[in-house]
Image 1: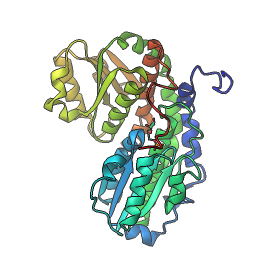
Image 2 (image 1 turned 180 degrees about the horizontal axis):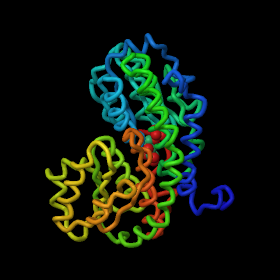
Image 3 (image 1 turned 90 degrees about the vertical axis):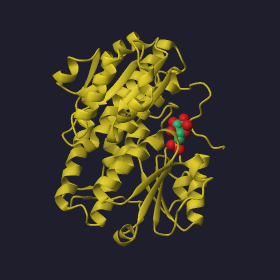
Length: 370
Ligand code: G6P
């Protein structure tokens, strides 16, 4: 078994460490640097069709839904098309406003999630064009969609999704460039810059994976906590949700992800000296805001584990633990990089608690029944 895990103790850890490779494979052959554009071989929608889109709905479940939330930020920011994000099991039983000007995007690692497949069929029935971000070639969702952007994560065995998630973020980033360029709202220069930032990501991920040993030590100090709170803002809010989900799934510790600015409307009441609070506070757009949310936590005795940009002394002198991450100047790619400490923290807490990391209780890798 050790052999198929490539010498790692669990598939999850192997898959975490495979991520720079998975991202490289998802980018490979798709960049048109000169034109500041990307080529998505199975998208099957031409510029005219992409121009006709009035609204985008991204529909998914679980971790894939977190990727969808990041997608909303990317697409709205760079393409100025309104994006709604839905949970498939909610969408399919509503009376959603969908028509032939709506582009529905399904995100699914397996391509077999029953609720997501049903949401796609419902969208179709209402006239929408459907595209999918999938990891499994020829899966049901990939086959039925009008177009696909495949992630090239390779087979993911651990039930808790890791490399599939980060490659979904990459696929969304690539799609954003394609859509922005097709609609001519993104100029060549901007397209080139976004491509250049993406190309630097695998190396930054390799750098970030070096946190592994530090995170293992951190995990030892927090594994007896009953609850965790994860805070982030903007594009990093979905990464806070994802960090909390990972911890719940494999360590069975209750965890909640929250938009940092919303903390004062509820979770702040939970904060005491027993409460670890993971704060995503990289340099970039929302830095000052998140920083002050972090100070509010500290003022109430909360134990802050900050995930910050490398060398951020301001954060380091305030908190119990700082996980310093090699971030980009371009914050759009930071969610990809910040996912790594989230995954490692959940992993090490789970290992120390002795849970079945790759096959957590009650969970399935792909939920093909309702
Ligand atoms: C299950 C898995 C999750 C996954 C979700 C959606 O709950 O345990 O890891 O995020 O299904 O799966 P999909 O294959 O559609 O992305």
